[in-house]
Image (cartoon, rainbow over the protein chains, first blue to last red):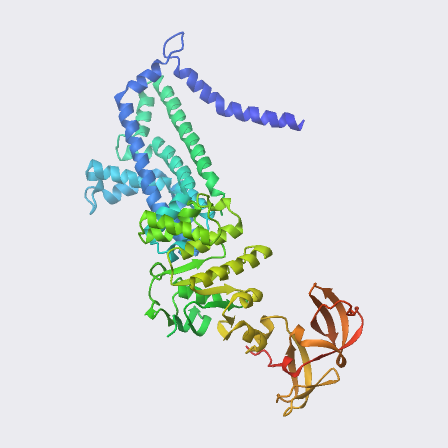
Length: 260
Length: 347
């Protein structure tokens, strides 16, 4: 009886997740009446706007990851090393993006950095890109910080730092050569979560009027029938691909992390 | 002039004085142990030498140079930690060569020095392994090689053996001492284990509540403890209450038996201490009741009570010697010099 219920739960869960996916895939293949074709996919992949927005978002995602690593790794390291009492505070700050909606953040940005402000970032395309990058880095903060902090918890940060210092190493070398490589697995998992978030982000990109993938998906969804379904499947595949790479990398680096 | 000069070091964390007026001169090539219970300030002194803590007052000089304000990475000091602190992402060879790489030593020279160090610690073939593939004892030896590779001026060892099991602890401490002698490097070794400190040091510093109670050779610290704390912390100490009969001559009475200390003592009732090996079973002397006997091979350890005060008597094993049983009434005596008058613990 117990077995029956556990199977029932698995089947119910499976259907709950798989049915919409199967439905979407099935629908995306029905662009021609009476037969299954990949026309919708062809149409999406041939669309220049798809390629532009997708590559724009990929570049933004990579930039977000770099910025995130540069901010989060030294911060999390320093907090663990020198300000352990501040850890709850920093953790709370990094969680704020989950509580404050992106739309609030972006309206704040627009008010602060509009063309009549002292720092008119929205005045130029590159300035707005920069602003969007900062926004993305903020959105990625909770995932990035958590991942890196967990990675650091497996290290004896203080002793490693002191050992390196007594051997003559300075801060840049300690963080770049010792701390970062040892939390690389964690950084990677944070990075791929950030990647997935940035690829699908809509609010910030739309309100800052940047040609990102999110607004493109929305635009396509409002105007076409079959292509959005195909796009959803593609986005889904990309996300799953990211997760797979994340798994792979954390496994590759996990071998070394068994060290104390 | 001394090589390492710790000049009236003081350290406070807020209102708490962790180290008070620590003053010591260490000769080149000396092996010094800081011995004391946890929280006595021994590690803080070590960390001030390393540069991880800044003294509240006082100064540290190495080879005549004042390093008090230098950062740890400018001091040329080798340090070994209780937790090994090997870099997990680097191989053993890269760990050992890390300090040389930081110093910009050319690759070929570095490789030669790394191999020399690995030979020195007796692990010549493990250069390509990662730290997690080594046992605790091996990891600590690699940590030692890493600390020594850049030819530091002073070697600091912060409880390096505490995380290891007993057998490795003894063999590694002898190896550390051997290497230290071979290289002639000035070394400070922090430990809470008195046997460790006594067995390998040139001099021992016994610390208690931030103060160096006594600085001396191991036999001095053991045989003539400067304070009651040193007497009780280093080695086993029997404490007995004595009633003073003649303060000027040093005649006292313990459990009804007269003992002649042959030196003046304070009047009234005093505490006397003796080492377990300073007492013998004898025909006359202080009456005691045996509570148990431990046979330790070379040594017999007899536990007894004198008017409810527990004492321990150590004597060498001798074939044919009669071993007392629990409940036996015996008499114990010691030479006048084996008795140490203890003041009451004031601090």
